Length: 580
View 1 (cartoon, rainbow, N blue to C red):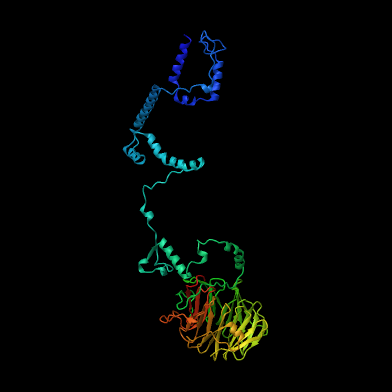
View 2 (view 1 turned 90 degrees about the vertical axis):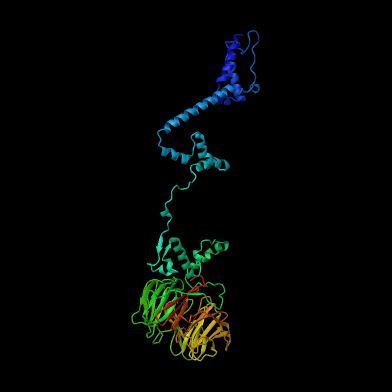
């Protein structure tokens, strides 16, 4: 009996002293049980009097075999006494922590304790509650989300944003921009109350002014456009198109007749005013530039923006009142002739050189005044005296040949493909010449005309307009002019009562501008193909056009310019066309 008493005491002592953490780790496991059995078998029990060959045997019986691990019972749960001991220990620990915290807080000032209560709340009784409040939302977010452990750890590094405790009112105040003392901003004021604008309002006003001047948002300024498959396919064609210069004509939607929406802009030559008559106004074929030339011996270039039109350059020709100035087809040269000289000035815009052409071999004209440049830039046509037309190479300024008509040459022009020449004579006849063979293809009498003054052809190759001294403009079809000896006009425009001295078609062939320099305000814009005159131009009450001597449209019809005898190059923005 003495051998069994110590064993029972050991069992009772182990149940009371084994901590819960160890009991949880001592779960029944086959591998662990086997190892413990081997250790038990290897250790003899000398207290029970057994020999080294057995364990747990009584004094009279054979040694017992240890049960396999699968059949062993799991360790018993802790008793109620052990649980009470654990609760008492936890309570003692909490009481000690509370006493230590109170001891530390005795030295804290009241303001610091109040601030802690505002920030962390009233958590004097439970510090674990404070930790749960600080970590709770982020732990919940990590549990709900399916992110990886690394992503959750990265998110845990960022604390949630809090509202600012204090906001400076001066930071929210918007800076006001002075509009009166700036000459560029002063024009943007709609009323006297807008003497100062905020930055956001000024930015909106600038956008409105730009879109109003351009007739909308240009294609290059649109940010919400996405490239389609067709755009990607034509990307190479666009790159090839931008590598050369020439007339890029864009066809807009159909222009409505009746009223033309337009705006009066700042004069094109406002930065270089002149009192002399403006003899030529022309837009650059490739750039947003306009050229103004007149009897003040100067050719000036201006950047067109519709507001200030800043000056780029002025070329002064001494003792050379300019009769006509014109860009070459590629826009690299400017040609100028005088009212009383045979010299032809050529200004190379790339090199910045002024080249005078004093004499053309074979040309016996004493005065060179009126001329035309072919649309393809290959030829130069000079209107001579006694009915002669002289054809020159544009590149070398060499004479190719001359053509002769009856009477005096009143005006001439090239067809849109540069293969034919239309010439209007002083006796009311129109001649059509072939450029390559220099032979007359057809000749007809302008209906109702006694004396021709001007002639123009449309860019699309459809119309021919002939102006006479009686103020009538006949609009013909080009095919009928080539095939018939007595073609009938599509429409006769009779809105002018004096001689039609200048005419021009816009690039889309939807507008024909006609003017007479012999009467003030004698300008009309004709809608095509209806051949009706726009009723809102010119504004008769303002009477600011005076005597108009020259006109031109911008390459994409966005602007319309007039040159008058007052030295002003009037500029108008046509809102139907969104581009320059």
